[in-house]
Amino acid sequence: MVSAWDSGLDASQACSNCTRYRARRDEKTCCDRCTENHCTDDNGTDESDGHAPDCARLTQELLQRIWESMISQRLHQMPASLQKGGDVLVGQLPQVTGPSYLLNRRSRWERFRCDLAAEEDAVCLVVPPREEEARRLPAPVILFLTGNGHIDDRQDFLWGGIDTLLRNPELRHCFFVAPKPLTKTGTLRRNDRSRWVWSEDGVWALFTEVLRRLGPDQVDPTRLYATGLSLGAAGVWHLALRYGNYLAAAVPISGQCEWPGESWPSRKDADPSMLRRLTELPLRVYHVDIDRYGGNPAEDMEWLCWQLPECKEEATLRGMEVDRKVELETRSWHREPPGASWHLCMAKGPLKDWAWYDDWGGDKHCLWQRVYPWPEWGLAEWLFQHSRSPDCCWRFDSEVLVVDSTEERKQEEAWLAAHREEAAKEEVDSTQDDRYQECAKRPKLEDFSEATRNSAKALPDEKI
Image 1 (tube, rainbow, N blue to C red):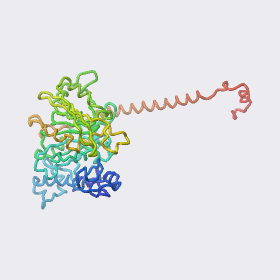
Image 2 (cartoon, rainbow, N blue to C red; image 1 turned 90 degrees about the vertical axis):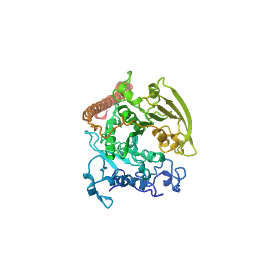
Image 3 (cartoon, rainbow, N blue to C red; image 1 turned 180 degrees about the horizontal axis):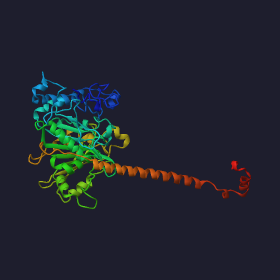
Image 4 (cartoon, rainbow, N blue to C red; image 1 turned 60 degrees about the vertical axis):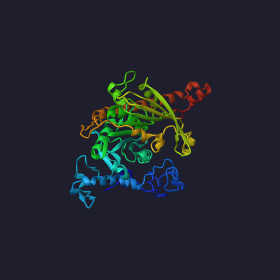
């Protein structure tokens, strides 16, 4: 049985210095302090263990237990033919079907064809509750959508995203479902500007399939949460527009809604059904006040909360380094039921709570590196205040979502082909125009003096 540590999807090796944590992809160490041999590795808290603030701190034990703990939790439910002295017969496991079993024998990465038009199966990491928390099943589930840097594995998927959530001690009793943003798998689509964004339909099809595989004894459908960073924050917004009536709460960080399709056309009112799903979903949005990299959700939230009672609260919270702080202003709007309360948490930027950013004038975007790991930022406390009624939550026997983006992909390819043809034509025209301009700059014979013209006329043709 291959664990998440040993999986080829994101190969792992131990840090060459501390040997305790997973080394970053294409690196020998887990963080810069280990690279510089400044790590103390005294097994203390994040503040005292001597590692860099952004160290993922993913241990081999954790990544191996991601698969092994799921097997041990399921073993008592499997037929006797699949049990042998407490061990799972790996060769027989793939033949088991149904929502009560986890079927991926290669790793703890779940695979599923979430879009019939996709070239490959979608994959996502599933992290179960820690073993000491397993008695609290069925457990809440957190869907995590990562940012643009992880598209097609440009950056290490297990560093700078899901690892920050796993560090939060108040989330240890949760399942985490983290899809990989791969362009061939149907989890991404192109937006109106032909840029890759999360596909809300593909993600929801994958997410609900994973829920079915886990089963009702493992996960609590009344406590399904979604969060994401940057591009993933926009993905959470879009997921809320379409499937917000199944989520208990959502937390987008450092990203803005693009209002896809006809959800909120320019100079028109928002779609009423979409607006109902959105306004009945508890939202807590984190953003740096000067961040424009991923858009800024403040104006949208102000418009959608127009004339609602508002209150403000200010706080000083810990930063990336324990002795540096971040100023946070939280604006809250409260709706009457069935409407939900919304919170806009604006950090005063640029963030100067980490020496690594000092030469850059501070951090203007990566707020999730504070919100996810540190309990005092209030993520877990706020999330678990919310749940869905059993009468209106997602159900295991609900209709399976089938996504087929074939027509959309044909239109997309036609648009891209026309765009490439137009770009090529513009390049040819530009080259011809450059040549014309160059010729126009060359001196003509009449521009020279009479003596020079006479000398030129006296030369043989091949000398001119």
